[in-house]
Image (cartoon, rainbow, N blue to C red; front, side):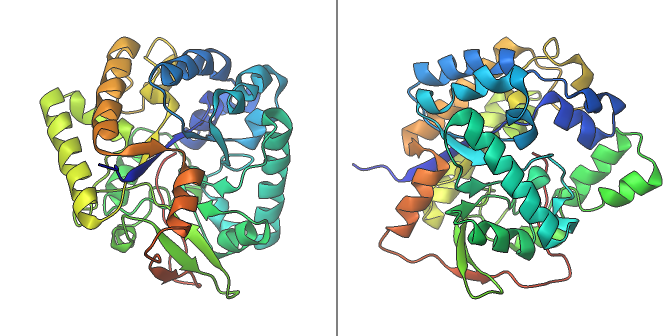
Length: 332
């Protein structure tokens, strides 16, 4: 029996980008954990024969200390995606010309260090706008993967602000972080944006449970595991079953903090799940991906997107014009 496909991706948010989004001044020195994170993580994926898409931040690609670790991604069989230049979750507020410059600079840096020109994009903080989608279409991108269709964004933002020390102007800049209630009305599965220019672009959301619209990316599952691993497993099975019944394979998201313990990133204790040690996280990650692989064929996002385009059923088209809230949000 042929399994349906599921997409697997990994947002390479670095230590400095988490500090920057949180408002901590130490980000300006661009501290990095990529050189110690990636080699064991790549070995771990190789041992499980998994290929996935790594979304790389352009600023990291441009820094020599990260070059060796990032250069190892493509030879290991993984796809490369663009995760913006400066990892600013308010990218959607920028004018089109500035967005284009950001995407271009990131693309050049990523191509130079990895040897691969990305043709897929994920916005930092899952931000998007019609102008951003038009820029991606201008540059011939195959897909965007920036949306997180959930109703829980405002709760996440409230929690985030409660754990931070932002000045009022910084809170205003981050007011769209994690999105709003309307984001839960967007599809959980893939679709096609109908852009204002008349062009189209495939959208692959980070999948949430159909109908419920609650997340089940790995960080969320690990948060549940803090209370009960049985609860985590039952929730994952519910999510995967719901995707099968809805007729699509999930786009499943991983983050660096899913593979790092508190001893690896002590400055990030404000993140949920950073009180779980690395050994337990690796065990939980293996358990989750084994469950995913049992039900689906796991492929990188680009391969998933091209398969959708060649599939027997056309994707539903959604308008991407100027709306009151011209973005959807999250944390990545």
